[in-house]
Figure 1 (cartoon, rainbow, N blue to C red):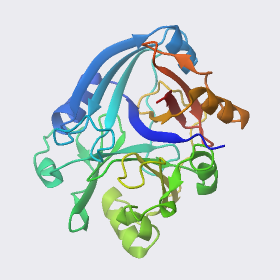
Figure 2 (cartoon, rainbow, N blue to C red; figure 1 turned 180 degrees about the vertical axis):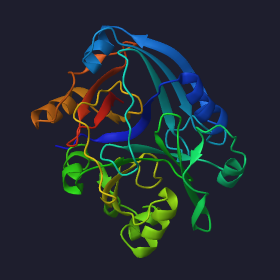
Figure 3 (cartoon, one colour; figure 1 turned 90 degrees about the vertical axis):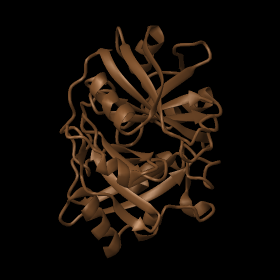
Figure 4 (spheres, rainbow, N blue to C red; figure 1 turned 45 degrees about the vertical axis):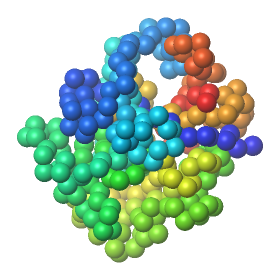
Length: 311
């Protein structure tokens, strides 16, 4: 039974310095700050499997043209920056092709203007100038202050490097119920149709500054999002350069670790399904923060942690 994920609601990003990260995400990229709070308590201890958890969480949202109330807006992306007071994590060095690396696709209205206005501080590290892959679609990549890869583009998604499409699809498609782009209307991004073509390789080479990149992506969507792309998940398998495997000792509180927040129709049923199929859950569903919020964390076949919330 597929879980019936209703949407990829938000993305968490662990940071080492909140003020420097806010300079990047809020002041430079232009995300709107929604809240700034410290969360702690028994629920969070159980959720993450640690003692004395205390996290400063700043929620940000992309500019959706003044109509940010609609979850279906394809320009809407919620990013939650997490600074861990306890436990304190270590830095996680990573490259663009490593298994487990997430990158967040953030819609930017005027990408050329943003690029031309970038300030001098070294943490604004663009991998290339904006690359036009169609007359109306420009893309470029930049590392955030902690080495999280950010894709600046005109649509809203989360990309994840995996070791095998078959293994990843067994989790994200067959268990979570996300649908491949080919299962619905022809709304997949232009990149999907040419994932391993020479044209695609040239584009990827310019994006990442790599000599002979070879990567293939598969796209999956929540069941009600095929028509507008909000919350698309890209699953990437790199062949060149050869990726490093997912670190076995990576912790949820390590710097630069990211994970998605998936809303599901029935949280208890989702937990029973995932744990019953042998996927490692860090806890049973627990109440965190306000009484109405319940969640649990579960690892995919590569060890990536994803959050599931009642929605």
